[in-house]
Structure formats: structure tokens, C-alpha cells
Length: 255
Image: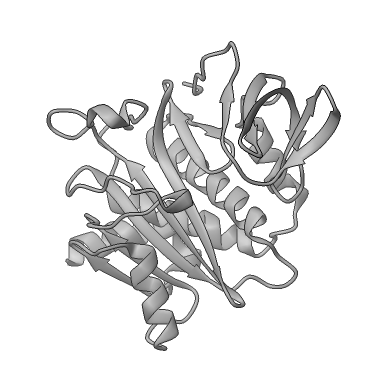
């Protein structure tokens, strides 16, 4: 355990050595565990929870997130942002923090697929779930560090992994440090700019779903609060939620 704590603290760096944390071999969901602990007064922000496996890992829209032991990083950070703030800003910050940490730790450069996924070599390697809870927010991040033995299930054909021997706890520390540093300047336009630079959807043709109908549009940008700015036959609009797919283009994460 001491060795694990040291590796985590290496990633946190000198500025955040005092961050309280818990390391678990397994839990139902790091987000759920933090949420329950915060409500019961056992955890106060900032607080970091990391598990080697999850039995009920969750993604957006109530979807499950495959979280087998020994193959991924599953972490949640409890934060109290300074007002004003909105969940879209937190998701943007978390995506940029995860990208920067992966870049520093591995030399790989994932791309961001709106709104909260990271892709590498055309495959999804990371999912992010930010959940507001009063004046607090829980940021859950799951990263596939290596392909599970036997590969991913057939229904997760889009899934991929870093597959580069990344140190799980040192990477977690780097992500937490970038998140905490970003929280100190949440409204800094540079954070949104960093998000935009890593999102190859901009300038691409997409298909999106609204009111049960699929529509075609071109992505023209990202708003300051994380909305996807698109232009279709009826003009320009901003998507706040939903799923988008590339029209005639395949999605390729940056190498």
C-alpha cells in the first residue's frame, strides 16, 4: 500500500500532496461511493477515490461502463467549485485534464469526442461523468489502460485501450492535479481553447438526433459552457446534450 500511495503522490506533485484519498481494490461505482460518503459527511471536497475494479461502473445516460480488475483506472474526485459554474465547464475541464495527464505520462495524444469521451487510434479509451450535487460536483473518470484478456466484448467494438504500460496510480495523480489546478481558474478561456484543439469534430459533417429524428449538420465550434455549435439547413444552433456521429467521415483520434 505504501508503494501505491507513493506512486499516486508522484503524480499529484508537490502542490497537491495534501489531497486526501482512498484506494480500493473494488467498489460498485466510485461516483456512487463518493456521493454516499459526501451525503453522510465522511468525505469533504476535495477528495479522491480510486478503485482497481467496479461492479456497477456508469457512464452517461445510465449506461454501464466495463470496469474489470487489472486493466483500467477508475477514479472519482469530489470538488466544490467557486460560483458561478455549470456542469458543462466541469466536463470540459475533466476532458482536458485527462488528455494532458495521458500526454505527460505516456506520450500519447488522445482526441476528445464531444461531449465526454477520449479516443485514440479510432477507439474510445476514456469516459467521463460529472454529477452535480448541490454546491459540489463529483467527476468520475474511467480509462482503459490495457485490452482485457480475450479482448473487449462484441457489443463494445468501439472500445480501445492505451496499451502502453501506463502506471495507473501515477496517471490518476496527474489527472487529479490538473483538475485541481483547473478549478482555480475554471472560467479561464484557455481551458475551452485546449478542449477545442483536441476535438477533431470541428469542421466535420455530423449526424445528430433531436426529437427522435436524425439530422445532418456541420460542427462549427464549441461554446464556452461546452455546447456543440452546429449549422444545419435551418441555421446555427447549440447542442447541449445528445449523441453525434460523423457523417461520411470515420472518427480518428490523434496519435
